[in-house]
Length: 149
Image (cartoon, rainbow, N blue to C red; front, side, top):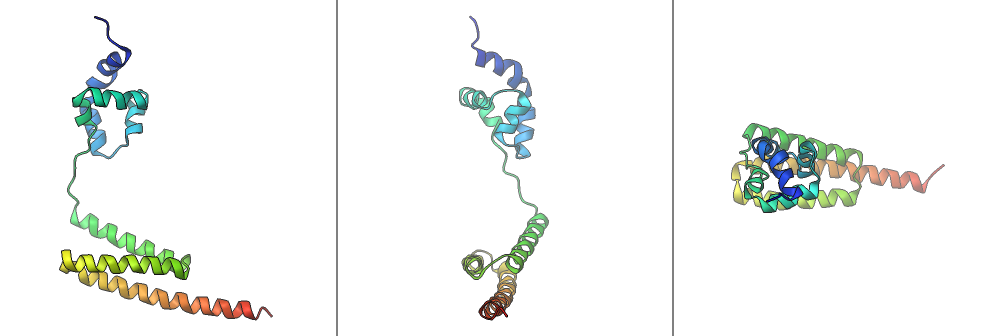
């Protein structure tokens, strides 16, 4: 019996590298990059994934536990970048949308994780200070526009 081209591709290029594929997916490598590394067209990889369950399992990333220190560091980076955006680029409408999402998150955090409610409260105070600065800047900019001379 002769093999179809996709079968020969599977057994020659993919099957020997299933363990490697699993490692790539655990590192959150995207499917198109996996196909590129295997030197297989993306569509072929997707078709083979449906046909061969072991490939389908290998292409699923494992859920990794998040290190609390990394999560805290990422939250701090997110807050810092949000504050930078507000201070440098946000107009009042952008700020209001950000602030509204913060209020929603604050309510959720108080319910789900009371220990982080203090962090959210501090973030809310930072945003309120930024809002006041933004309003002052907007009002002074409007005054300057009214009197260009």
